[in-house]
Structures are given as C-alpha cells and as structure tokens.
Image (tube, rainbow, N blue to C red; front, side, top):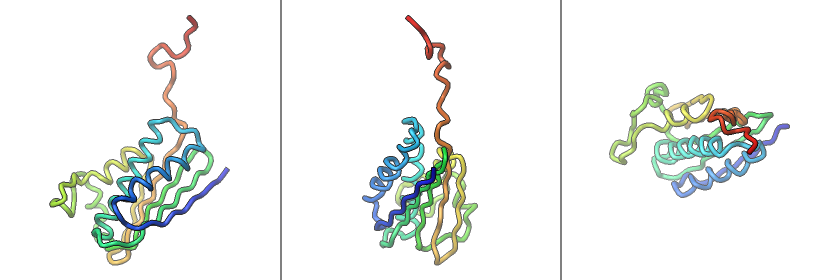
Length: 153
C-alpha cells in the first residue's frame, strides 16, 4: 500500500513542532514503535530547523514537507527554496555550523543520519536545499532479548 501527504507551511520556528506531529500522525499507519516515531520526529525537526535557520536565515519563506509510506518504508522530503549551500559535504560534517552565534551545535545532519536509514542532500546556491530521508519501520527489537519476553507464570 502506498500513501502520500504533502504539506506547505511558513518557514517559522514555531512550525517545527507542527511538522513533527504531522509526520508522526501520518506514520502511525505502519504501527511503528515509540522509538521509531521518536527517531523520525527528531530527523524531521532537524531538517525543518535547518530550512528555517539556514535556508531562509529566518527571513521567511515556505517549507515543503512530503511524506510517502510504501510497504514498511517511510520516505520524507523536506525542501526549501532558500539560499542553498555551496558545499553539502562540509555542511554535513559534525559540529559544522554557519551560525555559531546562535549556539547551535552543528549536529543537525549527524542526527538525521543517526536516526534514519538513509539521508540524501541536494542543494544549489540561490535555489534551495532538498533533504530526503528514508527509514524502514517495523525493525522491532527482539522481545526475548532480556529473557523475559515469553514467560508463563
């Protein structure tokens, strides 16, 4: 089964929470674990925050969020038409930030990579950035890992 949603919203920090909740609600169709929901919400937060803070430099614009569920996979795209990046590889390095005055850690892309199975970033200066993330849902941990999963008392 394939299902898709598209949302366009203003590039404002207050909308980051909206994006998290929207994707989490849409994702529930796949019966994810709480950890899987938390992972996806964190990755979406980071991508949207990057669009607002770096893509539009907090000057306004639109963020485009596309989410596709297909089988046990979730595909998420967060896109802006902001300033773009000249060096994606450098931007994806842990602790790299163009806004140190904002006390940002520069870990946005590192968190996205840690919480999702795959992340692809496309960007062109003056045209914007597109972050595409994928994650397989249903990789539930073994119930018996602590020896208490299947017991009859």
